[in-house]
Image 1: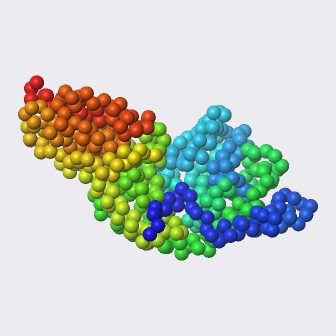
Image 2: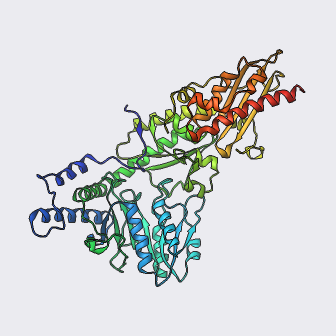
Image 3: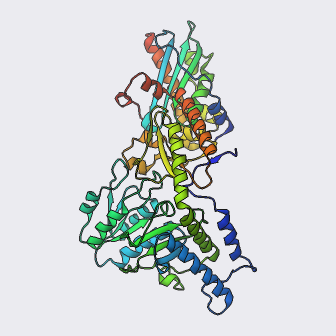
Length: 404
Length: 127
């Protein structure tokens, strides 16, 4: 088996070979390299046609109209454009925005930027299962609230929010509802004809498309308007100027087309792999599954291992590429703010691992992962004074630690 | 994070992991750090009648550098008198393991662990 085993599909996915092949037809002199905005010759017309076909593939995955899709550089830009664009366009109605504490930084930092522009933001707590409490959301809504932004699938825990119910709540109050669906598209059913969602962010590289391309869904009925954040030649109906990167867009379109065809079968397979992984790990003492057990995507499993330290755990798991709940590669040992928001202690947040499985994950890889995890936990606990104390029945919360 | 080869060696093959019997009068224990800070070190020394550290064992909850620092000091204190062991400086540990600046606290913790174990021995033996 090839090592390390890639189990970080929530960070990014490899480009599907079918996607890569398609993209290569839009780069060289022999291919359709033209500028889609060139109206005076066939190079431009052909590129434009390719872009429009890709746009319809993206729209089809989420049951939207192709005219509601605006291409961006990725979900981060989509989140910026959606939140800033709507907040600024509708600022006369009010300057209050709502989001929740477990959102991606692309949403949270955008909100912070708007706070510096004089907007007021409510950051909702989530319940211990990671879900937003609808009653608390409703209570936070005010007459001057213009935008609510809640992600569909959380990138760290895989928890799926009830965006249908949140949408109803927002629509009833005339509040614009933005959803970051970077981790959701191609993983869960999204029907924008029935969902009351006004703006939705997509990324290509989370579903086997290329990096550097994404899209924003902007509802036409009722029409949502945005203040452009990037000015220039007026591409994408003035909402996002800049020459359209044909090969990137074609790649995203192909990735979304494949996702629509294969999503159901893939989810079934992922669910089995996830169960296999969890069955193999849950017999270890003091392990905890983070996030709601049922409202989540099958691809992401987040587990905390008590009495082992996160960074040494990552070192011990060097043959599997996973993501840690502690940002220990940076100078400061910051535990994940998402897991902290779920109420986890610093220690448990530090020692959490996100396993995310994807299109190329095999049973054999899962079995090997289980073996590596068992060995790592055994080794580190044999070395851990905290494990000994736990085994001796000492409550670690009663120990007078000397913080340093 | 790129670790030095020495850190990786100590992490992969930690020296002297374990614990001595708590009721052995020749054993002293130093435990430093806190779980919330991400590292706890327990260092035990076994001291003979001449006041020489005959053996040492450790258990550490912490990152690779913390594990390597404690593994290293168990090697260093062996054969030393209590006074000699007390002279071990965190800078020596950091230098030996080529710790990056963000991991210096691991070497400081290891020095503290030695001092705590020695203090425990002195308290037990009333000197």
